[in-house]
Amino acid sequence: MIQLLKFQFNPIDENTYMVYDDTCECIIIDAGCSNEHENKILQKAIADKRLLPKKLVCTHGHFDHIMGNHFICDTYLIETYIHKDELSNFQRATSYSSFFDVNIIQPPVPQKFLRDGDEIKFGRSSFKVIFTPGHTRGGICLYSEENKLLFSGDTLFAGSIGRTDLPGGDYDVLMNSIKKLMLLPENTNVFCGHGPKTTIGYEKQKNPFILEMQQY
Image (cartoon, one colour):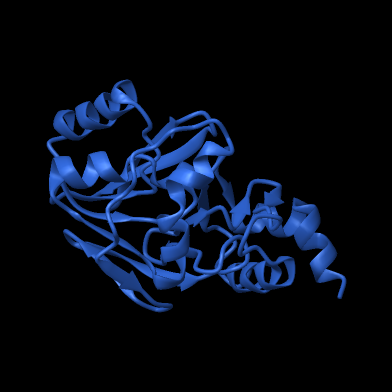
């Protein structure tokens, strides 16, 4: 059975997740820790749970989701997994963050590239990669059918969707990605890149963007 810890990090209030099972192997999703204090919070949680980080998975490459990549990769000697279409966001992470008056350490170049349908395995558990461009060109979500669990990054939020006015964003592409997510079981718990968790069923009934989409 998968368990998770959620941390809200950095000035953008990004959600970082640590996901593990009874083997104590874990993956870190979207390392947003941005300073020594936040690094220590994450490090203490790993030590307290006696976890063994195996992979760092990025739903996309916006700077607020990768601010902790350098620390995580250097501390735990693990590799970064991301869709190849996010490389440009990695390469301009430091310059882009400066527009928001945020300084970050340039993240290591990712070593592992994900495609739609790939499996992220750790311990006795796994997640399926769902390619969901639109917020960025290479956005992904992570889905566990067994655990009724989806990590949506910045594709889908509680009551909203990811913004599409940044480089690589495309509203029509994003809505097509969200259509794929709406095919998941309604009792799927959705853990978003910002804000509270939700469910697929709730978003189908209450999310104004999805309600508008369903009219056509």
